Image (cartoon, rainbow, N blue to C red; front, side, top):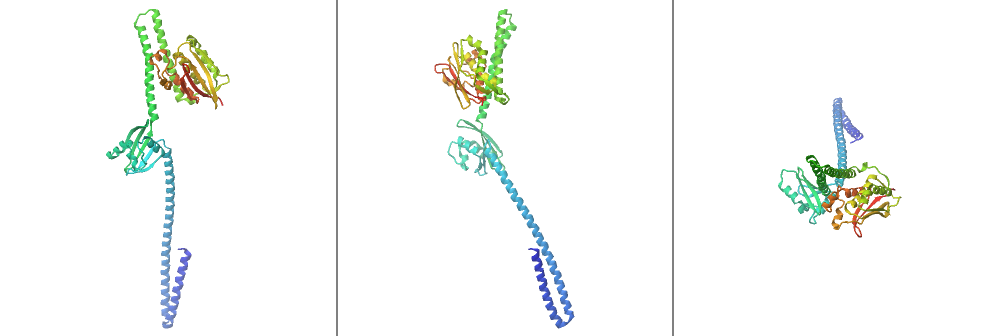
Length: 424
């Protein structure tokens, strides 16, 4: 109700009362004189005061209603703003859940699905043994038997964890039960993590094994020298043998250090333009004596203009370790050849080949690049080496954005095929 309308209403009442009072006064005056006129005027004044009081009361009530309406409008505005903010936060949460590296599914207390992200669906489709819709029936799949048993039998516990192995993959399942009996199931593909853990365990065991052999030999030689009165010739022989075992240790430590550098601090390795032909010539110069001793011919057809952007030490280790692999395992009177298969899409493709003994059983070829892998354990140990040479080659090639594989030669021996990126 507006103020103008209030004024108009009060004025109308006032004029109406005034008219009635005037009419009443005239009538009474004509009948009874001034005494009645004064009474009519008094009544009019009382009515006027009463009307003004009523007007003030209505104004206060209207103002209170108006203030209440303003408060409600403000509260409604705040509620709408809160709803918008909650909607934004909910959207952020859903985006986070969809981008999560974990498969997440929320269930209501009646075991119906409330929400799941795409990764959960992928994991579930991989481990599920039946074609089950993502709904209440999802928990009927046998892969969730342990989780359902926990839900049915554990009244006071709110966390459950187990592992699921399916389709060659290893999944970790976590369940969190909330206060209202709703719950969530989280699936994480830990196949890579488990493989890494096993590799680390194997690596630790292999390192301990590789260290034990030279350390035991050195200790034995030193005990003989300390506890026996030997002729000078024998002393020299045992000292030389101990020295050779220290070289094995040094080589192992050096190779492990190089692998660690590639794996963990690759960004710290400095890159520069390397002339591969000159680098191969350096490898030959460093190993010429050992090659000549075994009557191994070394030839390279790599042009002088092949420039690779990379780390000189790692590139050197590729050709050095491949050559040492021939020295140790290929036998005598062997030819080594390094050729370029093709240059394509900014990469140069090499073939490092020998015509030595090779490997009869092809099942070993896929594992040659594994750390400490032995085709013939006895022969490899006698031949020396750290057992890390080909693993270093593989990691060095990968560091330079290439790939490497090995195959049996056309006649005999092995062929290593790998690529390296040219300078752009």
